[in-house]
Image (cartoon, rainbow, N blue to C red; front, top):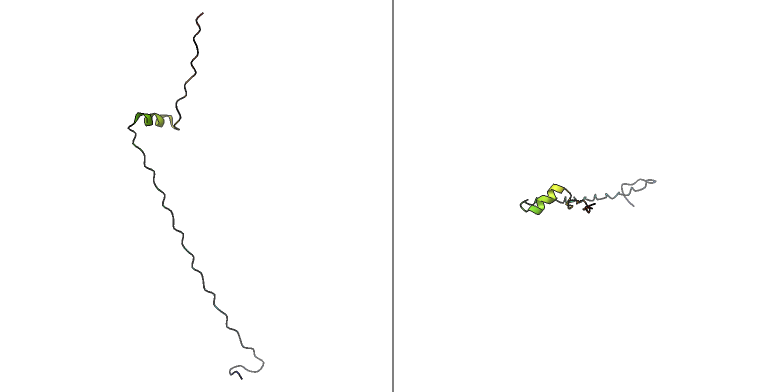
Length: 67
């Protein structure tokens, strides 16, 4: 006989507690700052003036026709 349980009553099953999983924190990547290069060389100065680093557009030379 099992003591503590009356006739007709069913024994309650113990519920297992679920363990909570700990979330891993994601590490944030640090952005590297780009160093601005010194503008001592003349070629770089030219590039800066044009903006996008493209060489200046030259107009096609028109041949001079003497009549």
